[in-house]
Length: 118
Ligand SMILES: [Zn+2]
Ligand SMILES: [Zn+2]
Image: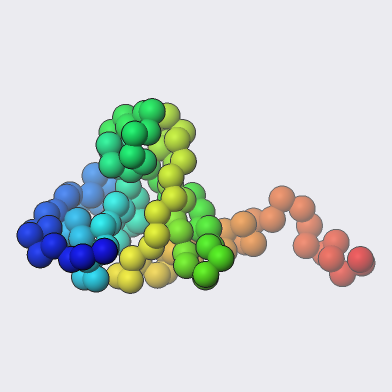
């Protein structure tokens, strides 16, 4: 992907925490979520040609790890429940990322003691 410097000036304002975010990360990657609170917005370019770009806010619900080890952040739209996955950026809030990643382990739907008796 070539880096177009004119894009560096694009910004959007996070509708959750109010942070003014540069649309392109330092390495030129397109950014779709806020690096501070990691929340996003359901807009047209989220999924190209997607059926329901409703403009509502999207919450980060989990981390998906690709075969190469790359982390994807999974968002769910609060209005239409559409799911999207986007690569994380180098300057994303790592504490929030870790919280999302360990959430299922911190709140297992079954008692962990079961593993001791297997
Ligand atoms: Zn934010
Ligand atoms: Zn939506």
